[in-house]
Image 1 (cartoon, helix red, strand yellow):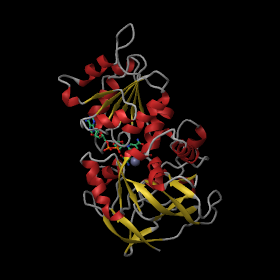
Image 2: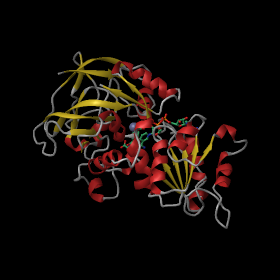
Image 3: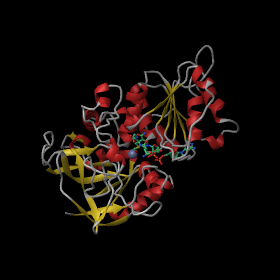
Image 4: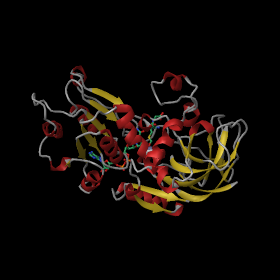
Length: 375
Ligand code: NAD
Ligand code: AHE
Ligand code: ZN
């Protein structure tokens, strides 16, 4: 069938909105009509050419919501008409990773997903006979896409697509990093670096968890009001700090009788490796945990004095907020529908597919929190 898509033809070039061809679902696959998709910084990262797994030409996009249109042979858990959110971290419930109960990083199809292919090693997308790569197993920058059954979360039918698409990445990543990865306790102190589409969701996750000091750090002063809107208690712009940022933040978090300082939990939501080091080093001696969420480009490395770890700080990473998509995503949709979490105010721009490059510009200029394309 012909579908409308924004195609990444080459690294660093704007997406080209055009008509591409999509084959129907094969064994274990599902055809989904995408109704809305968010634009995440990770899409921009891959488009920039800095992603070692970035393949071109490709159809990017991984933060969508839509409706099942057709199912392939062997599909048992979904049917035509079901409302779904695509999962770039699938949940097969049978691979060693899923069975371990220690991680959400299902390995059932990760190999082919990283090659921009469906699990059988082929692509369903083409443009005038030329193969197009899938992206993160989702390719939501197309109004129809094909996904494996294990990469779809079935959600309630009254949830608005143009809002809950954000649960497909940003909301779950931020809130999940707090609840699943860090397991933040009530009354904790926390520092969040980078108050964009992910960092603000970390902040609302910290508010949910009952943290009582939530420090937000961003180079953009406009993010102060945004952080406060979701529960941030203090804002620091590193440009306003005269000396080294780490002792400044450690000082801000001093509250025990020993006056050592350092946060119980810190989160990097920037993808900047210098910031990742700062985030680790302003975690509390003895127990502070620093969670890396940001994605750094190929060739970047993190470093610190091992003494930082010897003295009890813990460095962790979090992908998709540690969420098991088919199990957890429908619950997060419920939280939104019940008013337990907020999404609407973070969706600052709603665009048509033809305006998708403008959505990337808004992100790069720090003018949006989330732009959502509605088909
Ligand atoms: P965004 O562009 O909306 O926000 C980034 C924020 O960081 C901006 O507010 C920017 O001003 C701020 N910032 C940049 N450099 C900074 C610095 N040196 N110090 C302080 N603040 C700084 O991006 P986003 O969509 O929120 O994504 C954030 C990061 O998270 C990206 O690297 C993205 O690829 C990654 N990400 C990871 C996962 C995961 O599962 N681990 C999921 C989604 C996104
Ligand atoms: N191909 C990239 C991987 C980047 C990355 O870490 N992606 C996150 C999700 S970001 C969503 O916005 C993730 O889930 N990672 C786990 C995985 O299996 O990819 C690179 O840099 O190599
Ligand atoms: Zn994302």
